[in-house]
Image 1 (spheres, rainbow, N blue to C red):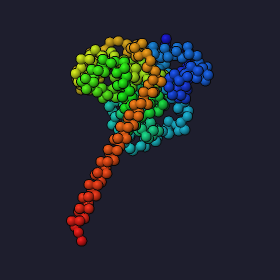
Image 2: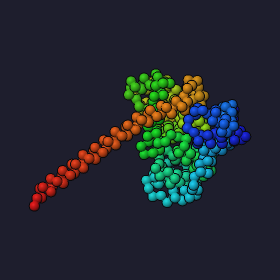
Image 3: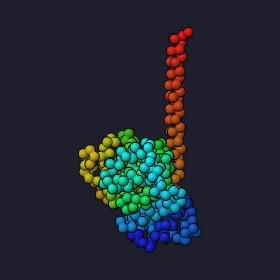
Image 4: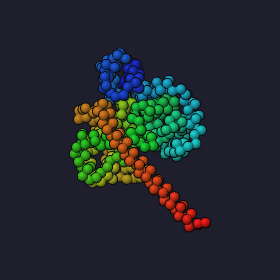
Amino acid sequence: GEIRPEDGAAILACERWRRKEQGERNGLWRRLGRTFKHSPAEWKRLTAGIRSGVPASLRGSVWYACSGAATKRQETGISYAELVKAGLELQNEAATVIEVDLPRTGVGEAQMQQMRNILRAFAAKNPSVGYCQSMNFITKALLLYNEEERTFWILCSLVEDVLPAGYYTPTMSGLRSDLKLLDSLIGQYLPNLKDHMQQRNMDLSPITMNWFLCLFVNTLPVEQSHRVMDCLLHEGPKVLFRAALGILHLREAELLKAEAVVDAYMILRAPFGTAADEDGGLPLASPATGDLLSIMYGLWLKGLSTDTLLQLREEHLNVVGAEDEAHAARKEAFRKEQQATRDAAAAAAATDVGP
């Protein structure tokens, strides 16, 4: 079940298909067979190989191909060198935050410069996104298997194409929608945990937000997080939900004993990690046992397809949009109220002075 070098054509077909279409099963076999001459059996073999583990020696090439980075590099009308130059000249909030975050990433000076080039080039290419905290950790993981320029194009494909829109924008509308979607999936697949959370008014979104923003690279042990990345780049964002539900399933017995969100944090901050938080020395739950990938693709999650998620995501996006509109209306009403107060004060002052 491992990926072999001769699978390269199928992998490239995979990334070309993903960049042309949205969704997983919307006529996939017909489309794939007509366009790329690959049979369902070949696709299933590729998927099984990636899920069972991509060898480290091939991981960089698989990530580069599956993500769509090769095509993105060809289609972008500006070179990486030009984007790096533009990025290093930036003097904005994104550039400032990147410089603050880089020393916190835990890399040496040489790799830090590579990350600076990548992140600033990304900010120059995507001014509407700029930079979002967590991109540094994702970039660090990608750099383990690819040289600098390839890492940049993989990052671009991840944010621009693979993940839903709005994950790293100022409003984070896509991320907020997916957190609501995850909450509804917990109710569907882990109903006892959902009831427990509701009864104790426990909101896991501060924890799960970090999972999704960092794509689990800060949550799981290195090899497990990279196996999740293997699947994410091949199958798309449904993998994030499978990973999240898998972790919650593994720790459900302990979570059902939690009385507050801080208890859940101790369990979920590093579900497969060590017994102490490296940052603050806080005691964490003992590491979970079990194979996360097996749980992610177990029969208990049968039916959790991209088509299903796309439909549910649209519903939650509408809710998030309504929330943003209400927030904007409140903000505008407050602005008008403040302006009216200032105008009244100015008018009163003018009356007091008089002719």
